[in-house]
Amino acid sequence: MRMRDISRARMLSPDRLFGQVAHKLAVSIISGASRAGDLLPNEDGIRGEISVSRTAYREAVKFLTGKGMVEARPKSGTRVAPRESWNLLDPDVLAWHFEADPNEKFIRDLFELRLFVEPSAARLAAQRRSEDDLARIEAAYRGMTVNPPYAEPTVQADLAFHEAIFEATRNPPLQCLAPAVCATIQWSLFLKAPDDRFFFTASLVDHERVLDAISQRDGDLAAARMSGLVIDSLNSTLRLLAGRSSEKGEPSRE
Image (cartoon, rainbow, N blue to C red; front, side):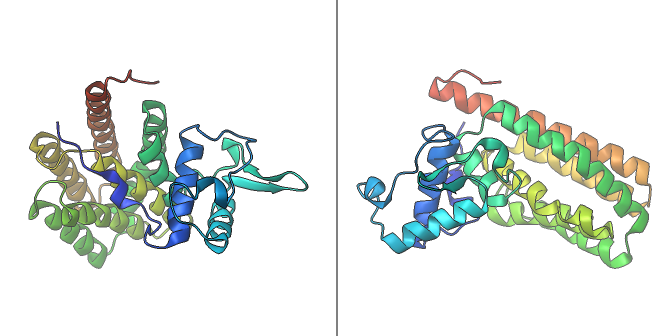
C-alpha cells in the first residue's frame, strides 16, 4: 500500500533554520537516539547534517524547552528531559511523534484520549448547538464528500468538522483540547493511502451519522455515534500502521 509522506504536515514551519534544528533534535529525542539525561549536542555536533548558526541553535533549544523536551541544568549543560515532562498534547510534539515513532502503544493512548473527550463533546454539541453551529458542521461534512479521499482539502474539512463540534459545546475548557484532538486526527489521516476508498467511505458514513444525531439534538445518540467513529478510526489506523511495518520488515510494537 502506498503511504503518504507525513513529514510535510508538521505544525512548526521547517522553512526557518531554527525550525530545522528543533525538528532534528526533537526527532532524535523521541526516537530514543537521545535519551533522558543525555547532553544535547551543540551546534557543532549537528553542523555536519544541516547548516546551523549559534542563534538558530539557541532559538531551537528555547523552543524545545518550552515544550518540556529539554532542560538546562546548572553547570551541566542542556539535557534531554524525561518523557513525563514533555507536553505530549502539543501539536508539534504530536507531529514529531508520528514522524519519529508512530508505534501502536502511542496511537492507542491518543485514541483513548479521543474516546474520553469526543463523545462528550458530541453530546454537548447536540444539546447546545445553534443553527449556525449546525451549518458549520454540515458545511465541513460536505467538504469531505466533494474532494478526493485524503486530499488536503478533505483533511482540512475533516478537521473543521471536529473543530465545529468542539465550538458548539459552549465549553471553553473542553475546547482547549480541540487542538490536540485535531492534531491526532490529522496525523492519523496522513498515515492513510490517498487511493484507499474503503476506509474513507466508512469514515464518511460515521461522520454523517454523528451529524444526523447532532441535527436531531439527541445527545446520547451523538455520543454513541462519535464513540463508534473514534473506534473505527483507531482500528483502520492500526491496520495501516501494521501494514506499513510489515512492508519495512519491522515487528509490530505494543
